[in-house]
Image 1 (cartoon, protein in one colour):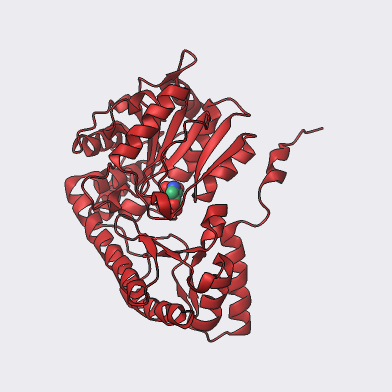
Image 2 (cartoon, helix red, strand yellow):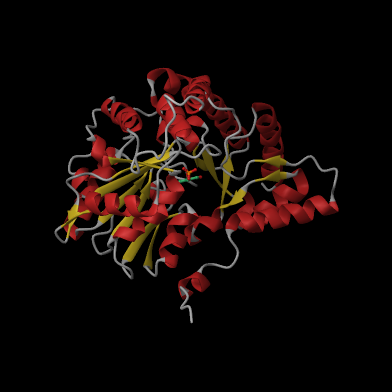
Length: 397
Ligand code: PLP
């Protein structure tokens, strides 16, 4: 008889976005003509930068010709892709070897898959509010979740607690959902904590391209000693609009060892066993996104999202509602006005103004009373949603 992984039954029953979808579907059924505005799921809306499209077309043409056709790719990443990532990091003064860079089909894949190289039943520290996949991937792996809540008092980016021990910790900066960033000083504290505990940091840099404050590190490897205690997971999803194209990368430094084992060597073995890599066409598109020309085009798209975030922040300012994020991230994390819970505010915004956001309580208990807005809709729809949002907030004061 097949023996099943019963940890799946420990997963929280209703995933946040499914519950939102259900509520929205019910609302639509009752109000078929409603003009719904989505400031909910963090998906991009602008098309791929021209440099990526050109690279993809050229790669498709190569695949059509016998002399330039490509079969199986290198499992851990084509040379040109690794070099593009290497050059991208070098611009910030981070030196990587090509062998430390692995391609992936997106950050979500590797944030969960990386657990394969650790033993089961370990303690995973999750700094909350957090992207839900960290908790779920660890529950499935049979790990214990240690929750470290944050609050407005620590700018939603906590320092480590010397009394808390864990084997791995997820740090996401800029953060989803709060938009918070970790300062150099806070990251230094986390690196020191990980070294002392012999823990491993899994640094999620999915939103690094949104950082505009020059003092905020884009990569954990900007911190001294991080190569001895951190894995970095990143993605082209939000940088280059690759949510539907699917390319990411993971850095596992050569220096990173635990219990006499090289984490890089384990990850090479894992990848060469479990995947045949990503497609040549997409790897070319990703390399183009990271090139100076491609990145400049990416930043033009990001500027549109940032302007949307500004419109949302202006609306909240106009009614005196507290929020964080928005500046270095595509997320604005607002306090629900009138003392409403996250789901009460969700219902009110949907029912009264047909605007959809994300309840903060879905990202951890300490998110209760907060609400996440995203800047990924069109400027026109964001402006209209901001007006409606301000109206609901004003009515609650
Ligand atoms: N990490 C964070 C914090 C995210 O918010 C997301 C997606 O929203 C991901 C990772 C997943 O990114 P990808 O599309 O590369 O799988």
